[in-house]
Length: 531
Image (cartoon, rainbow, N blue to C red):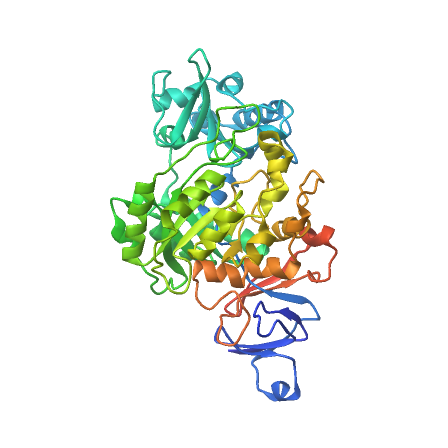
């Protein structure tokens, strides 16, 4: 099949040819891109598609996402703006769901996600007592927006066997009052105490949810993505099932180190027909938690908490052990780090370690919320890559202000500085792990990076604003350089014809309206997969 797309405003993300008006697609690949001319017009084409002067971009690549979690939380009670602003609102939403349950379903767990105490009228975290007010005989848990903290009611803790005598696991905390009473709050690795007793969906149900999510992502222009918390014992096969059910995105899996230790050979799983767009990309560890949850490992304590610097959730030995395995299988080592100390720990560990991957960073730091200039320079010299999330600038500003103060918040996410220093980096969403409902939307993230404006209307550190073109590149060409998915991220000859058509020209739209841009059509390998 040979198709001509013409009369378009094509931004290619190819620095050698940034703009074009037409392209030819044959058997899923771009065979010509440039300005429409008579020679092109005389060619025989099975199909000719008039782009009608609309803006065309390469398909968006989300280099750090959690599709499995996103697919599941889309089915849960959302506990944040624009519909929830207080703990009382949360309680009302949960009570409504319980009231709608049939009698035989009242043993099911009730789940909510997305609360952020900084956005709640009470300015505090919900507790087990709040949830017990709703029900003490139905297990209920709420997941904080960062996903690093959950709140469980008494029934959920009873089913998990957690009591006031239960010791917090390494890298986590079971929160207690001064009198030893459990608050119901579980941080970081302590969450697993609750998760391990929760009912699990069948593999078919999970695959069906992924297929449903795929359509939503296509509507947002996302043609390739990643799973940054993959389970090596099941998720490769799970995504294969999802493809069979209609899932479309090219996907890279990163396996959680704690689950990979017993089966490192899973890293050798490779793409196979009919699943050539599924690959294993690396190993994932956590170096700390979240800023909004006060578990990111900071250089200075949190506001009004003189002894709370956050949590370190890994060690030099653990990092080196994981790196040896990554090197053996020639995959990336990917480490979550937000606070200065967590970022420094990673750079201190690997600043003199030789890279084992030739075409991309062997080591990636995810989020990189508070890097110092010195740490950035050392990391860049060591070839360490960065994947960061501009949506956090938009959605979590008030939490950062409350937890760190304005001066420290202004030092966060120095996108412009990172690019100017020569960082190998990309943008992503971390969806659903931030306090906004539409977390996967790349246009909202681009607006945040271009304007440095939070949902509150506050702007901060505008010296770190980027251009629209820089943001598009960070979601396309530069995301490909990080994820290593072949032949995508640019519209150029020999590349897959993965592209999107927009209803407005993002390069000439007012900054305040970038998030209102819609995807009209999405193509993967020249096939229209969304309209």
